[in-house]
View 1 (cartoon, rainbow, N blue to C red):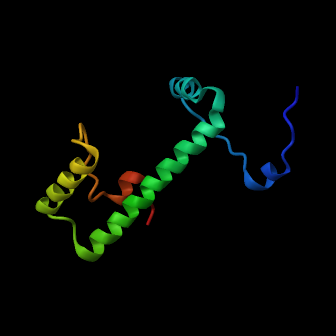
View 2 (spheres, one colour; view 1 turned 60 degrees about the horizontal axis):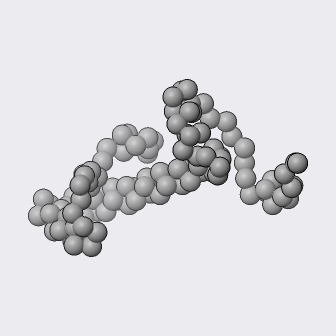
Length: 105
C-alpha cells in the first residue's frame, strides 16, 4: 500500500543526501527504528544546532563580559547539582575555540 501524499511535505521539507561510514549507518538504522532514519537525523541535527547556538551565545557573553571565574563556575555547578542532582560527568564548555565546532566566523 502506497503512503498517502501530503502536499505540505513538498513545501516544508528538503531532500538532502548524507554519507556515513558503514558502522555509523548501521547504528543509526538500529537506533532510529520505526520512526525512520530521516526523523532520527532531523532530531539529532536540531539538537546539535541548538547546542551550537547556546555555545555561540556563551562565546558572545564571554567576549562582552569575560569568561567566568573558577569561583563562578563552581557556584553554577552547585546550583545545577541542587536542581538536577550531582553530575556524573559534566563537560566544561564555558569557553570554546570556534574552530573546534566548525564555525567559520
